[in-house]
Length: 244
Image 1 (spheres, rainbow, N blue to C red):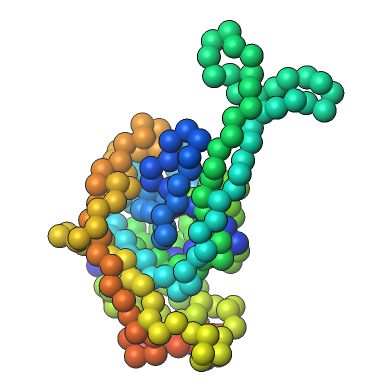
Image 2 (spheres, rainbow, N blue to C red; image 1 turned 180 degrees about the vertical axis):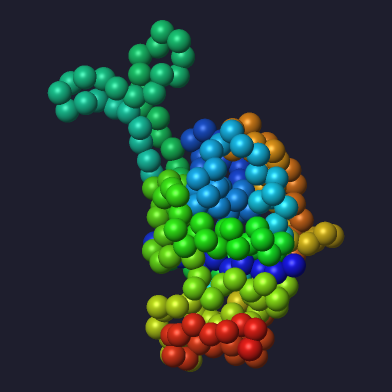
């Protein structure tokens, strides 16, 4: 068993698992359903195909930079500038009307995601992330990554999930090392584990993205001390995790 690391960072991200109608939520870190959907886009896998192989990967998230929770006041429909009505049809025979929704998202978040599984599948995913078939997004199609999702030294076939997430240097590539007084003392780690104290409904089942089928998943939140448990990247270059 090895681990593949991904980096999910951008101006806006949204990882909702309970969105209904006009209220679109987001979690404080990537949902497994969202990450599996991103992998499907990289592979070019259509919605009608099952995703059980990807869902079987064990996922962990290291929160390198906590995002700021924000909300977008969003409208669809209204009066066209030429006087023509357009909008959403709420009932048969009714005129189109304006729909107001509130869409929550995370601003300026930076996540290191680890996926633990068999080496052959991880190699396939690593190649797909390096040259994705379709556009990758951070939870919603309009929210694109600010940096590549593919991590140059992120394929760690000899490391388990916890070790890989702990050994990879902070901050991510391309991020200037902040002054000591601005650095967090620790980073949050959310690991998928049996018997975890938190439950998330984001475990895809079968052709999940066509049939909207998701099961419960257990996770555990811990913290890693920056500098002692997580190394600090001083020069902005890639490093070999195996030799760390």
